[in-house]
Amino acid sequence: MTGRSAARPRLRSAAAWGVGIALLALASLLLRLVPTDAQSEQPFTVTAAVGEAAAARTFTVTVTGAELVDVLSAGEWRQPGNWLVIDLTVEGAGSDASSYLGRAAFVHEAGVGDDAQRREYRASERFPSLVTDPLVTGVPRTGSIAFELPADATGEGAVELAQHGDTRLDSLVSVAVDLDALERVPERAVRETGWEHR
Image (tube, rainbow, N blue to C red; front, side):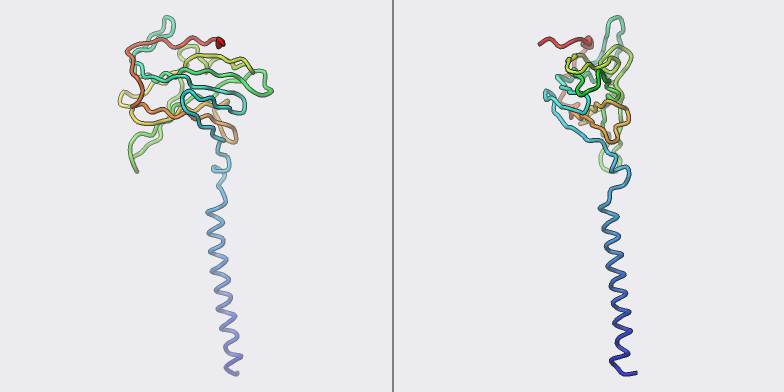
């Protein structure tokens, strides 16, 4: 066997190793780029600030105000606590004759760094509000929703609104709320749900 013919198997072996390593690197890159099932089913988030209109697939909403309340009332019902009260105007949109706010939650990051925990508070259903009444297409309604928060809740969070509790592959409106920047009032009533006056 000549020196040239002995070098060929070594070159083929080195080339095979090189191709194998390149394929492994490409597979690793593809695994990082291709979304997981959970990532591919994320909602289509529409962000807005207080006072800005946000259009989701089946409704349009404007958060018109936010404040912290020590005692919340609705008719005869009265409850002390640490209430986040959100005033809003919302109307149905699209071809559905009516729809609902199936998801109304305040999402709050508590803690810092590795100790941070994502907590979610659902809108109270202890009194009639925009989460219990249907939305009508093209007819704006006003009212309040309220979240009972822990007494020590501080920092930033977001009010999330969607047609369904399961928001996968659907639109989700997210309105940022900084608890530290809100006015605190000793007592107030929720706004009665009604038609918007223009």
